[in-house]
Length: 427
Figure 1 (cartoon, rainbow, N blue to C red):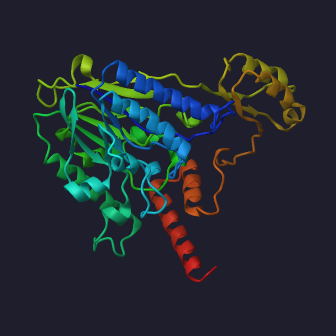
Figure 2: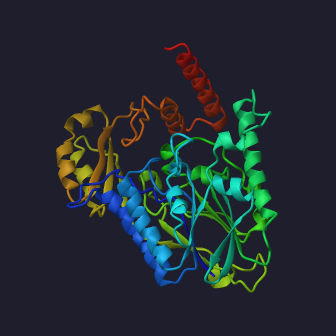
Figure 3: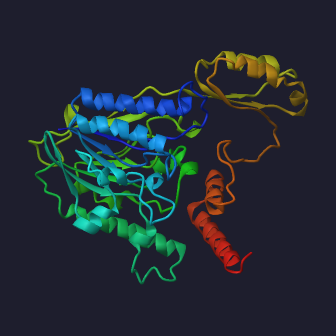
């Protein structure tokens, strides 16, 4: 049984893009669509039996009709090829108001053949049990955890009333663990099984390599320990949320597939692609993914992100800046240049010359002089303070400043109280 796992498609990312003639989107969105096409081509050409999408189809919570159309076109190709496809709901797929439909719900409403949506509706209708995908190679059990909606997880919980932020996070963690365990109890060990989750995990590797999801994140939940996922009950764990591919466990294999394309420079150090794996259905659990069937990252073509940092030594910094630029292959790349200079060098610096030297780049994401006393850490150029979402802006800032989790949670809780109090008195 051949399976493909991917996540964090984020259709709608236009950051660092250029207009395309005859298209309603930029070159950057086209990069994402090209990568998605490569994935679908692989799935169809290699006769994959099941595709597991671990959440975040779009960048925006309420995507445009154009973005929805382009996603649906490619899911339809999987459906027409008879590939069983499981679509998990991520945080970017959820609406801004709970009463609204989420971005993937239309596939269930239209009853698209071979396409299943993993959301809380399944639990309310079927109970906390895994879904069984009927693939061409036989059944595949899929347990799942969509992005946790705190109001749903803690509904009716007396412990949640008056609880501190730390206590609420513990309750959320416990609720997630119980959802996984309830599904694990219904797993048939004689049938291949996958657990797919859209969650931030507390593993050290994740904390060090989260990538651009830190500033893109919509909503906040606690980081969940790997132990909460009861891994021993599954053959493979397919994760989504963080944009860099990484393996968190070997037995059973547990992977973040990462995004299909770099969203920002925070993702640029890691290869982009999707996971492929092959179950030997004749073997028992724990041995089904051995040998050539073991999970591996299938890379896709991605636009290069190039960061150049120059620290000129001479009084005239320009020759060293131009030399540093000339050393790099910038063809069709997204480029950021930081020139570290003192006050005297800054006066001699000719940025227009450097800009001309970058003419072969796809987009110049940044070109700036950095002075020794400039210790400010601004928000990324693509992230603008949003007066309508002050908590999200504050959280982004605190994450970029590497404020410890516990202190960040206390600051956000205090900010929430201030906002709620000001709204109650009409400030």
